Image 1 (cartoon, rainbow, N blue to C red):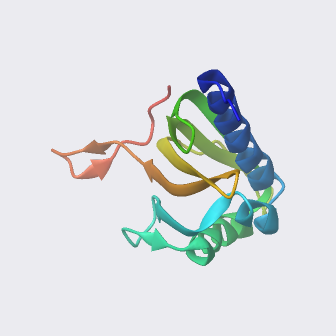
Image 2: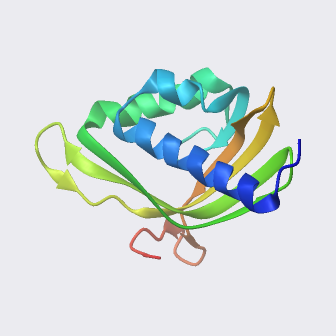
Length: 146
């Protein structure tokens, strides 16, 4: 099978788009199919590392509990890929309407997705979300936009 680099980059972009779709649908089963069973996630909330698909989905379960309607936006996605390994980075923002009806804009974070082709399917094996940090003040900088 001959696969072109551009085609692989498009496959990763579509894979991340499916993650966004499943987040917005609050579809945990759909998300489970997009990550490897042993995914390692460095998310914005403690602990430093969430290991395994159940830990990853537990984070989404917590987030979904706050929202009546949830939106996830990805901007400026850059993908690098070969036949079996790919990574993408860009900016992400979770926002929507809380269960009490209050709209929230969320904040922009830096997002990285690392993928492997496993049994012919791309799966996220590592992701990381981070917030810029003001080292002198010891606080996160949450008002930045891409």
